[in-house]
Amino acid sequence: MHPSRRRFALQAAAAAFLLPGLPAALAAGVGQPAPAFELLDVGGKPVKLADHLGKHVVLEWTNPSCPFVQKHYGSSNMQALQKDFTARGVVWLSISSTAPSHVDYLAPAALTAKYKAWGASSSALLMDDSGRVGRAYGARTTPHMFVIDPKGVLVYAGAIDDKRSADPADVASAKNLVRAALGESLAGRPVSTPSSAPYGCSVKYAAG
Picture 1 (cartoon, helix red, strand yellow):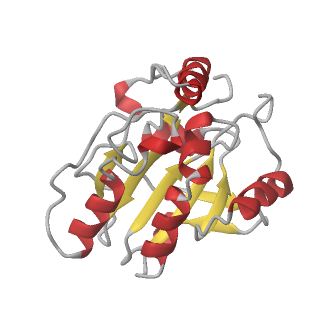
Picture 2 (cartoon, one colour):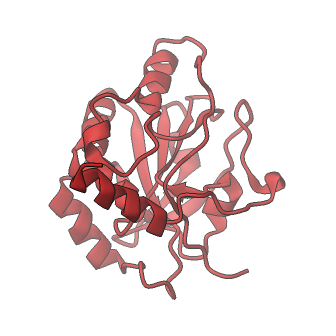
């Protein structure tokens, strides 16, 4: 195995690639109304999902300490998606559900600085310290992606792509499932792959 791939394989194992258990009842269902929420962004401004009714919305669960998140930001894959689709009127909300007690937690200023350094282009970066919104959607991993249509219906939930690795080299050959779902929904067509198994690090929820 090439040394770089060995390194990414070890990172993947260390990052808890296996999905943590969440009760099925907590997971938002594709084809159903997306759970309403209000969260504060990193600047302390309240952001409501309801404010964006009539637009496509992407929810991206994120944690910059996760090797899988680093894969998609280090390769500029996530930023390219954000730029492409916000330019087309899509609202992109990146959400941190990392518990304040966890070593991965970054306070709003530090989280802002990290994503600014990466050149992120999301519409807002939201703090879900309690994990309430993450649990409502059944967000299991970072990243875990959700696409909501203009009627407020969840039309995609799952992985960003079909290459379940932490290696940035795999981005080029992957099928980007989020890009496909948004492209179809923006064109008024049903999403052909409405769900997939997410992959990444487990979301570091607060206990309880």
